[in-house]
Length: 283
Image 1 (cartoon, rainbow, N blue to C red):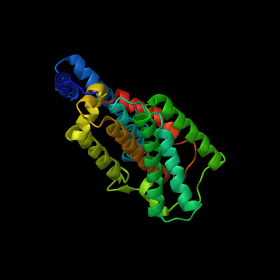
Image 2: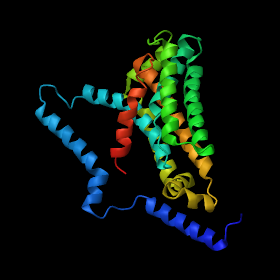
Image 3: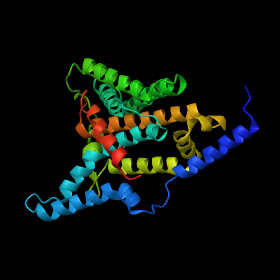
């Protein structure tokens, strides 16, 4: 059935308007400033408080800062993996479990199947992309609920990981080069920072400065209107899950690098800190 020209033009105007409104503007009210940057201000206040008050523990020491940075690099990637589908108005509960599955894939490739480090990294990230693609196809192509689909994926992956590891930890055969990257520093900064920061910048640029990002925001605002004006709604939604799977897979590889091991519980434990960062972070 053909769409009337007037209806299509109105839909295009609606998408353009909602996309423009979705783009971050300049906050004009104190309430907007508090919503956007309140958590950042609170974090700064906590740092200042413990730096001044906690003299015995020496909060603002280089060792403590390095430990905090190292501990949050994986959480940042898992948060980005959850944020991408959410930007397209889809809720993803599986990035933590996907990171865990990718970590086990990477560790098993080296320890059990005696593959090289490069092959293990590729397999770990490929596992994340494959699982993200499955989520995306079920949600975008078959119109299943993203919450139910990704929750089922996370539950199934947790069970499979427990079965494969027999409730234990994979430690044999992990490449020393990988663990060195995950635990050592360059110029006094954790090596993982030099990977995670550029990846974060790329995701920011993708969402804020490219047509893909504008499509995602238009779909989030009004997917029906976006479809009427010819935007690739299904393909864009699928892409958010695939890129999220890639990021979760990369997080899994770094999880193996940081811990020098892989198990069934560590990856899923990053889900709630990551979702907290997504919902409470600056917008």
